Image 1: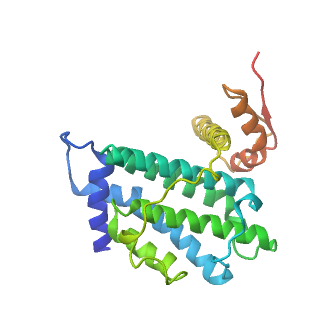
Image 2: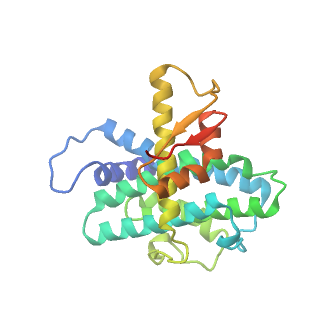
Image 3: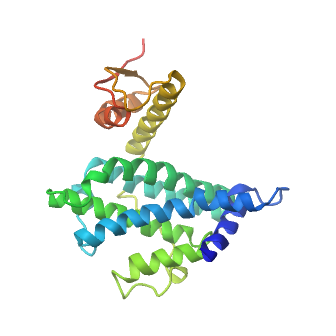
Length: 260
């Protein structure tokens, strides 16, 4: 916990303030920073380890990306986008932007969406390919986050590296701080898919807010959700992932409206 607090101080400074600007720094800010990122990624890591220890996935021989479900391919594509964003910001001496990009990925994409939507694919999933694809994708995301987070939360990144990478591949670099910096893989990039899922996440957020404002809780099923989006690509994404939207919001039907 002491090292988590030390990483929390670093994270609070990197993500909370723009270098050169005045800021109020207090203990509460560190506690908030720990909950915001280190604890979030640790919870995702704990979820993975809990089920992987029971199911023993073959992490050395993952299914090829093209054979994984859409949700996995989206996360892989989103990871390539994350690498570019974090790298470009750091090369421009902008740690705040890179830290916030990393935080948004972990909180919004990885924890609140990917893990939440794919829990049933882990452990006791009778579809071996689907199960292995889920483990491989989450594992690759955790390793990437550990590597990108090394400049910001060095202690946490090192623990994740030793437990996730060195335990699987002893020949890997001895420390995350000796590992090569990730490079985006164009073969895994998919700007259209990332844009479509971004529209899905926005609809889910807006619908949750509408439920909260009206006092109708998510556990209360609704018959119909009418949605639209500014572009044809985004509307296609809403149709493509209508089932996920319906399940997440507890509605029986999602209908995508065309403009005009």
